[in-house]
Length: 406
Image (cartoon, rainbow, N blue to C red; front, side, top):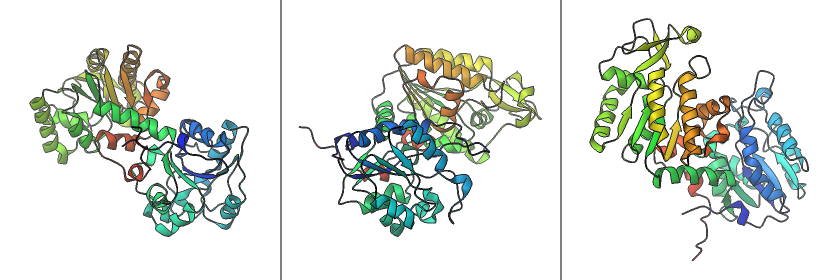
């Protein structure tokens, strides 16, 4: 069943504990490179503040050791940016420990309209361990629990699972971003309009195997690019030079091609490539059609492959894209991903439903200034991939179901 929304919960005078995803990229100076995840949380936060509630926000950032505060992983930059996005609210980080005495005192004195951003959850090992005692302290911070962190929805961490379990006596609802993510991805898979095309890229077949298996009977075509394409090409007898190859995935790749033939799903593989001697020599890339010689590696699909992908995408009514076509961060090996991105944007303008998986695919769309030209850009790469694999999330199943409207 659909999950209950924060919009339908009375928050007047209540403390609302929200699991947000403020895991934003920072540069070497600690400045935010991309604040999209913070901006996407604003509708949920405004829903609470505008209706007389207060906010206690919890998130992780990066990969701290789990042994206490680390300056480079502090959520202070995220809180500072949030303060700019909520100019009428008082936003602060109450101390260096998300469950410490300063945090407890700040929560107890929190007034309606106030916003606390708890320090990085992963400064405690208990977050990733799903520790019940750690979660019990966090659970005491809220009268209502909200999950608005799609980017970590597939993780059974304390803030995602143990906290709502400890708050079974209180409302546990979905934030507006989480609802939007679930709606787009579920609709894309279960109720897609044909032609339905999946674009799968990235480095490894092993990372995308579950998604391929789940999508094959549902889609009309799968466009495969990125490093994962070379395992498929090698099993078909092509020489791939020094390109990425997963020998232990060869048998699975054969099964994928056989299964696609069985259900009549088109698998579009690259026929030409942007190749260079090494990743750090991407600026020396040349186009090679067919076999790739020793000493060269494929770093992007070539122009003929991009053209074939564009032709397929032009007639699509539903498109799901997870994984870039090449090393898009290093021109000229961004050309394949750019061509595909432009085709997806054009299909959107022509009425197609287009969903971009998070992570590197979202980063590519931002780099190409096309994120606003598609139906939806997910905030969660790993979570969106697991949804494409047909998996459900414990963190979502724990949320209150939407009341029956009949």
